[in-house]
Image 1 (cartoon, rainbow, N blue to C red):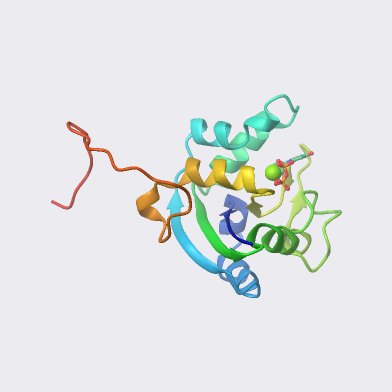
Image 2 (cartoon, rainbow, N blue to C red; image 1 turned 135 degrees about the vertical axis):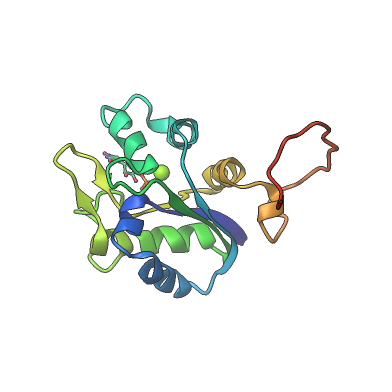
Length: 167
Ligand code: UDP
Ligand code: MG
């Protein structure tokens, strides 16, 4: 089944100059890139993204990690990949959540580490199922930023919306 999945190259992936490497690994899947952008992650976005983990002892640290405070690189690269079995293929390539348990040749197995505070710095986020992919893609992207209609859209007219345009 053709599907889409959200991928984030987390701040540790950026600071370790792994972007090209990770994109090359992802190209092995033969999936298509449907969207890509750099995002400065607000506390609200990080909290919403990881809301299923809010009761975990490492939650606070995880939010600072995704925002880039642990690495002094305050952004992530957000991507949507599309194609046959996209979610499973990217998860397999990413490897297990815990870098110590991840297949050594997987992205997380190759480049991840566990900090002394116990957070898994695992370089990449990948949606784990179709429901999660839909929630996450809608959280990180607007329909106009994705080159396919990933999910149903509607057109609305907005007045008095302030936005930056080229001067
Ligand atoms: N995480 C962690 N310790 C844990 C579980 C998760 O530091 O015991 C972090 C890790 O960075 C992981 C993220 O929280 O990628 C989200 O956790 P999830 O269980 O959703 O794993 P994922 O879907 O990323 O494999
Ligand atoms: Mg997850």
